Length: 76
Length: 230
Image (tube, rainbow over all chains, first blue to last red):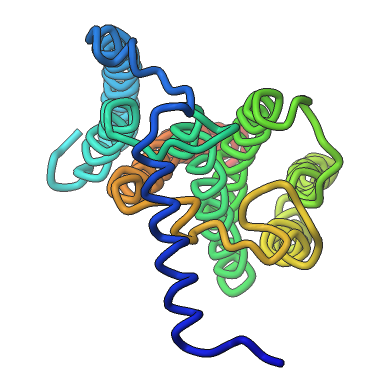
């Protein structure tokens, strides 16, 4: 009754793997392909990076100011 | 800031930048329903990982406080939990936005989501408990013990209970979140650095807050010394 024989398992596994490959290959799942091919995604990435770097620089200056306060406190 | 001592702050900037640039640009699996939003893995899921790591730090300092009764350890426990709470709330809000797209509602009645909400409430209760105890030593001890319970609840609500029932959320209902179907190898290259990056970035905020607390504490004890008649 049991059909859990090794060849069937291998065939099933191969089929599964192949079906995933075909899912990856076909383009019918909607992705932002056009935005990427036109290179507009780089504009978004550039803006995000600038915003984050700006916040990071602001955090660094805050860190420096606190370091200065710590030094002043120790020298008292 | 010195490179030698504060290298991890620069590392956090580099790693978060990697998450922003790489997370947007690397090829991701084409999956139905998720589509391009699978990239939220680098921004939403990492919030929860950062939260859990910060809460682990918090409970570490709570246990340390119970052994040393040092006020500074108590402050470290509180501030780590605060930073973790910020990450947790961000995780909840970003998850809600993502849920609207994939599941059609901002909130679905799901064990993982409700567990996450309860965890946030547990840590809010920790903050309320702290604020309701005016005496410093008592506050330190009671809230340290509560924090250990809170950490156990975090594990139960985020890691254990969602895995025991069916859930829409990956990593629940017996579906591991890190199976090959959910997370492919190219995504891991960005995902793991993103976790470390966001965690260190939050830890940076926590460290600044702790240093301000320490300065303020010293200042207040100086004032106290001035007031005392000698």
